[in-house]
Length: 221
Image (cartoon, rainbow, N blue to C red; front, top):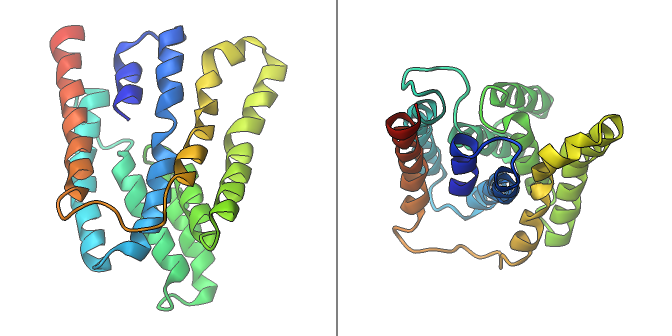
């Protein structure tokens, strides 16, 4: 995540360093989506989980705007935390009996639409649902995820290469979505971390955006 955002802001587009850093950075979002699905089932208090995500989605939106647009009050694209909040709600819609089956698909489509105004867009919602639907088996999860990235990343990438071979050299970082597969295989399925470790990510995400935004304004702009 930090590597990806650093490259996006400070490293010239199309350079080998830029592409390598963003290749590694493609790991983060799918892994986050995976743990949203897992977190839904492992959390001790779903209501507090939603509240925590919502609070940090608001905080992170302003940090995201400051980092990438040098404007705290830009209300365009929102951060990945907002995407993850929407993904968590999608998992809840899928699992909860409070939602009538007839309304579940329209609700999920509306959530995907809202995610289009956030980092990673509806792809992240789809990845999260893929992990959730196939949760009975790690092998099935990774098979389903592989199918999803084939549709959203790999096939469009190959198609673009056939049209223009130079596309490969400036966009092969997209293939980094393959990297989460071995990482997810290492997960033992148990609730991890201590009482306070969950706060590390929540704090780190907006904090690193604010730091990068400050450095961008202070030393680049």
